[in-house]
Image 1 (tube, helix red, strand yellow):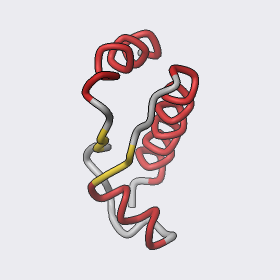
Image 2 (cartoon, rainbow, N blue to C red; image 1 turned 180 degrees about the vertical axis):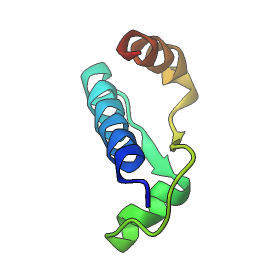
Image 3 (tube, rainbow, N blue to C red; image 1 turned 90 degrees about the horizontal axis):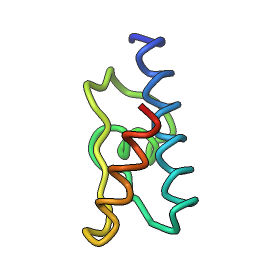
Image 4 (spheres, helix red, strand yellow; image 1 turned 45 degrees about the vertical axis):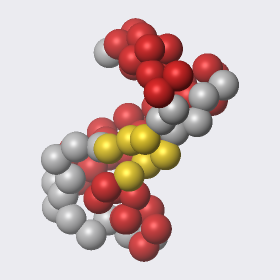
Length: 69
């Protein structure tokens, strides 16, 4: 597995959760990473990170993510 990519994605997951908390929003991890968190181990390389969030929070979350780069 590509450890460097996984470490970067895990850092992005932590940043996104932190941003959502600061904004008072909720986000839910979904897809492959959600399954891996449920299983307690990384089972494969992931191409992306998928999220659910309330539609009402989308604009603030998108702006915050853009600011994070």
